[in-house]
Image (cartoon, rainbow, N blue to C red):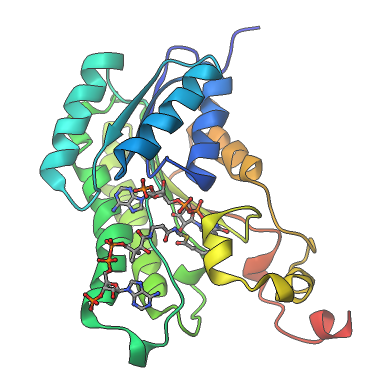
Length: 259
Ligand code: HXC
Ligand code: NAP
């Protein structure tokens, strides 16, 4: 059977680990050629090797999404290797828990620069390198974009911006046949994000607030990305797809406490 993304070029920013590397693996298993990008040369080359070991053609590029000129060079290199970009994932992010009163202006700016400006940069710099019409762009956002959270003012502000970048770009680039969507993962097990944000001792309590009562898997996010990038989603743009076990429903109350 022909693989669903055979011959397609999928570019994943922030792909040396976690959810985004999981997405890259999802596309690799469906026959795609992968460009993966992150800051660390060592980590991103290891990720590219991992994808090649899984049978995909894969190129690793070290670049910071805050470096616009670096991204332009990265796209030129990626397109020379694999042709125009069919699917583009923007998932680089930084996060930590910090009360606002302990957060320096530079700390706030750092997270906004990586998550929000980085997503703009990744998408904006791709324009001349996209396979148009038909390209599918996917930002990785979070529930923080719509639910205010203590000690997360930096990530909440940044991800709220990511949602708007997604929607505004969907409007502007739709006429060229470019779809722009976002995935909002809930708590995904075995990720750096959860290690930084969730105390393992509170796992039962956190799960108790989710309609589906469990953390998600990286594979769940990869499946959502495969759908959004597929021809089956050809009429879907500007949407924020929650893949979150019902986290967005926000049951802060009795249900969780009763268990
Ligand atoms: C307060 C902190 C801090 C902390 C850093 N800073 N960590 N402030 N509490 N824990 C401050 C520093 O003091 C500095 O401010 C400023 O932030 C920049 O720090 P740098 O170390 O120079 O930044 P940089 O090297 O660019 O690293 C970015 C980073 C780092 C975000 C700080 O943690 C990182 O590289 N993270 C990438 C991996 C990651 O976070 N993965 C999780 C993504 S998950 P001053 O004022 O001293 O100069 C995610 C969760 C979503 O997004 C939701 C899950 C449910
Ligand atoms: P992760 O493993 O730390 O992934 C973050 C990736 O971004 C890493 O590959 C990192 O690699 C790269 N990166 C960070 N800063 C960068 C920069 N300035 N330029 C280029 N690359 C950069 O974390 P994760 O938990 O899997 O999160 C992945 C995405 O899912 C993020 O967008 C996050 O907000 C979102 N999310 C996660 C969860 C969760 O439960 N984990 C929930 C909701 C949303 P380098 O260090 O090599 O640069």
